[in-house]
Amino acid sequence: MTKLELISELLVEELHSFKLEVSRLELIEKNLKKTRIKADSSQIEKLVEEHLKKLHIDQKAQQENRKEILKRIKHSRTVPNWLIVLALLLFLSQAFSIVYLLLR
Image (cartoon, rainbow, N blue to C red; front, side, top):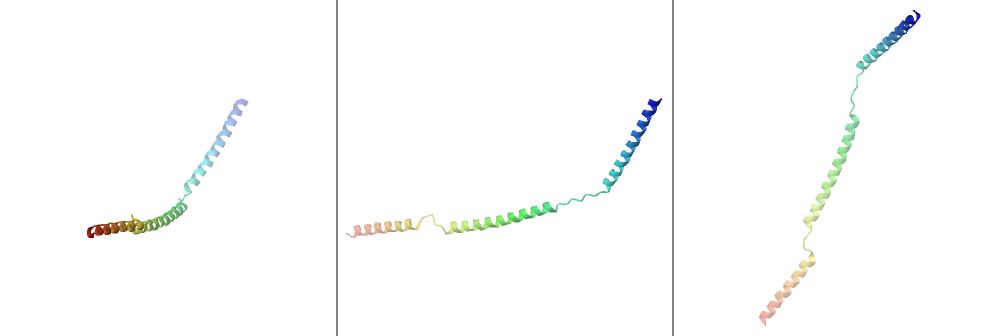
């Protein structure tokens, strides 16, 4: 009968420790339910705001570059000045040659 008593004592001890663990877990669960977690997105908002500022600065720089390029294109010529002068000289020389031949 001593073995049976020993086994029953072990079972009682195990049940008692199990009840203690269950009560401890219930206490932890209550504390977790009371705890409120607040979502904080301030760091993400700060990063997004900094990124948007950088994008805005880059966009302004691109707009200024585009304006400068369009200004240069508008004031540029497709035919260089020396070619215009050369064409005028050739035209005048041909005109003088024709006039000279006609008057002769």
